[in-house]
Image (cartoon, rainbow, N blue to C red; front, side, top):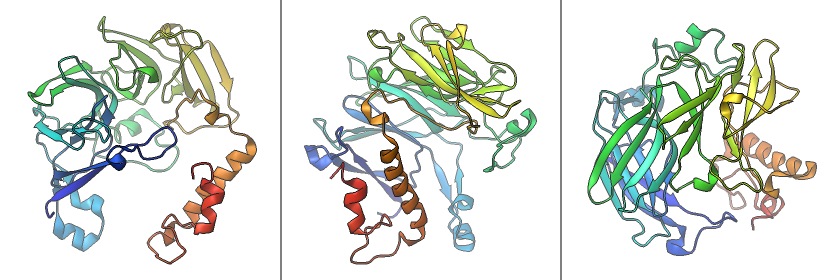
Amino acid sequence: DSGSSQLNLYEFNSKFQAIKDNDGVVQVKLPGLAMMYDFAVTDNFAVFVQPVLKVNGMQYMLSKEPGKSISLEGESSLVHIVARPGSKNAGAMATFQIPFDGVPDANLQFINAYEEEDGTVVFDAIRSDGTQSRGSSSNTQWPWATTLDNYQSMASKKSLWRYRVHPQKGFLSKDCISNDQVYFGVVNSSTSGQKHRYMYAAAGAMGGEVAPPQGITKFDLDSNSQKSWFPESYEFCGEPMYAPRRGDDSEDGGYIISTLFNGKEESSEMIVLKANDVTSGPIARIPIGIAVPHGYHGCFAPTDDANWAYEEIERRAKLADKMETRGSMWNEVKSDFSGLGLRFDDMEEYFGDLM
């Protein structure tokens, strides 16, 4: 429909196959142009936050550049609670306004969400204030920035928030957990979609002022406390990843893994911290042998899926290379062409383990 967007919510099983319920997909209509960076899930719902955007149609006709034709409005964002494909009321949606406090709730980085006993949906997210400190455009070349002033001219203020909304009663509250400059929030994956006590994040070294991610911080939501570790002034941590410790099922009984970039030597390490003793710093530092650009993402997989042999890595790398080199052909349609840039006789080679 004109003036609306369609959200397709897919759900897959552990083999990346669509679940049987509702063929693994629900579709809902959203008002206006919906551009959403991230979402979270609970046992029964998927949670989306939609900021209000203004579209300049004339600007788009002249420039053909969507980025120059869309602007963020200083208004209340919408939170959509969508029943997951495998839930009882699959596809049902409740939408509520998030009270506007002078900063639009846009570009949220969801950390986790869960349902309380009375049905209230709680989600924690890192919120950007939507502005750049000095209005400069971002840099897409490495290094992203060379001085603190340079970084602050491109980066926006971030903070950690908790939102509470009930599918029938409406929006309940939003509270700032920490005004510190934080990035890349994560929880123990065993609590994903469930109630959590601890959160971990990369943190700037200047409290609430804009600064690049440098240390590792831990939030205890039960005691409303925060503990952090910071490396040397020329060292910068990336995204923290939670790795469980065998034989310990407690929520913070595992490890925090991150990359650490040494700006003086222009080299990187993997660092390991005890999740229940972040302030003591790394218990292990493993040189990588190369410089990993600061800010790269990562994840931890405890299964054999992460232990690929060289041949498997090479096979999957070929798929990525082929998709990239064929990118210009994605809009071409032929009888033997798949739309991924692959001929159908390639499919068995690259996707044989999924087919």
